[in-house]
Image (cartoon, rainbow, N blue to C red; front, side):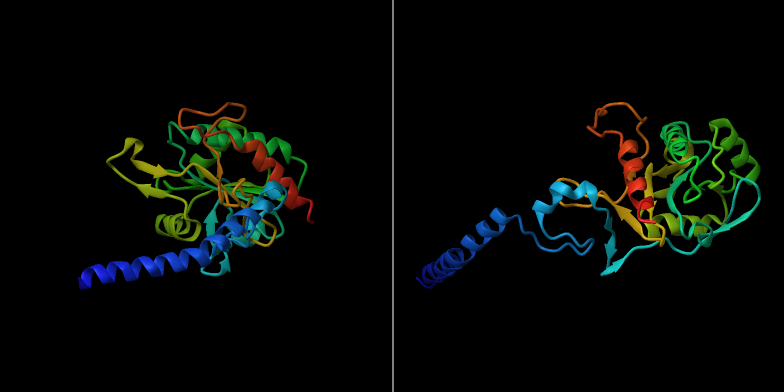
Length: 248
């Protein structure tokens, strides 16, 4: 009997909650309001219709995420730090020269992006090797030449393996991992990070008001969706780079 009364009491509470809460929930859905996401300052689904015109900041622990400090060496043997890119819109990728699969379209896509901004001094690219023991400045220079990477602000970077892996995994949240159990001994995401002139990671939003965060770089430009229904995002990225450059 006591159990029966308990169940009845719970049912009454649920019913009362529903009478008050459900109309409010429907009202919020009708208006397109959502709970503020801790990662970016978007609070209304209706605004997502124009999301491609606004680039979000990526917010982690209530702070806008920005590029960490770094000190690496480029294909010419020059020391390059995060300060080199201050005042520039730039892309960050993690790759390695011996990669036989996704790095190939990634590099080809970056060459396409290079062509779009070849006359701008306000743009840059940082290609950071996750195989620094092999990818010396000489190896990186040969790789850049092979792909036709001629843009003066495109640096192929190498340095301390520990600092590069910390930068990729902890600072950017982009997978970089040495793994002897997989093909070619390395895992990485194949994504590009877009950075604004002040060093903040930026992103457009999808139609639901969620951040893309990073842009797919591993599908050749001009190809349709692959078997996993992933589509190229290079033209989208070029558009967003131009938006940031127009803020100068």
